[in-house]
Length: 402
Ligand code: CTP
Figure 1 (cartoon, rainbow, N blue to C red):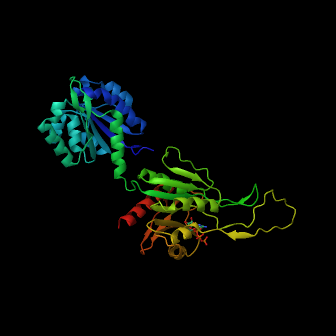
Figure 2 (figure 1 turned 90 degrees about the horizontal axis):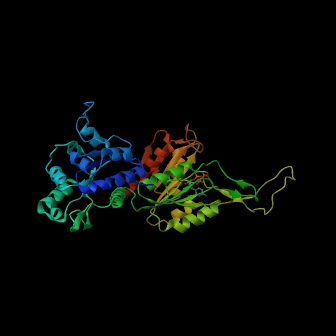
Figure 3 (figure 1 turned 30 degrees about the horizontal axis):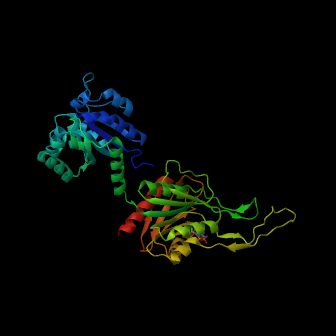
């Protein structure tokens, strides 16, 4: 999933020939799932029509402070504050200069000056204009303020000359912005290993011992972690959960506890954070019948063997990994969770109580308490599993930072 999914972009288009390329830029933003509000300077209309841009962005395009026919005010402050990111492309010499000296003689500039969020600007001008010390000074000023320069390319310019000043191509602008945002994410480049779902312990070719885990909690954590920039490996027991749109998550499907153990240990050494959200079966049948067991006897008992405790094993060989376990409890909840935290050498444990309404296997909601190995404890209200996943990751981040 793109880091731009769901983001609100204000695209400011100024009057340079490269403005014709912004039709593609709008399309690329839209394809990434952004909401795009185009604002044009009056001169940009000479290079591309508002109709093209409003058709592509599915929104009216603004240029004036007041709409001529209705007299409606286009509130530049609202426009600026509503956006997650402002993108000025192309940024002409004229607009750069006005941005750097806080002039507000059109809606685009007034919106820029009202913005509190990150502004990207992609200059476009002739090579000597770009090199001009006043332009370079303006660019520096904007960078000092915190605006982000999307450097122009070298190549053939509208004047026929060759040199630096061509606006970056729309795909390059998109890549640049996505990379920038990704690097700012709290789990950028962190390797997360997450387990989810139940395990099935085979009895015979048609039967197994399992549990009611839906896998939803682990999947939500994996998705939230990807959104926060992590490189996620998700080892999942049998579940109907899907990861559509999260193509960078490496999903490994397993069946039994032993298979989960194998896959988890394979990835453990290169992992920064492990979150064991899976409901691993504690026991497996001692033998697995090759043929279907017939119901010949009046009573039937099945000898069981204890499975490896995956988390306990990880805790024994922990080096720099941050280990997170789950504890599903019905009584003496905090005490039992703390015992597990210590016994398994964990950094943090997420406690669910089956006594809490709306928490547990079959719900879309969960109510958690987080305990850590430094004596910290955090209580959370009942929330969607999506929100719970975000909170768990935030809690991990807080503890890793300190
Ligand atoms: N866990 C594990 N391997 C197992 C059993 C559990 O890695 N064989 C992990 C779970 O994924 C969870 C944590 O250990 O993160 C605690 O699981 P839980 O079932 O609550 O506790 P158990 O240690 O199995 O203890 P008990 O069932 O006796 O409460």
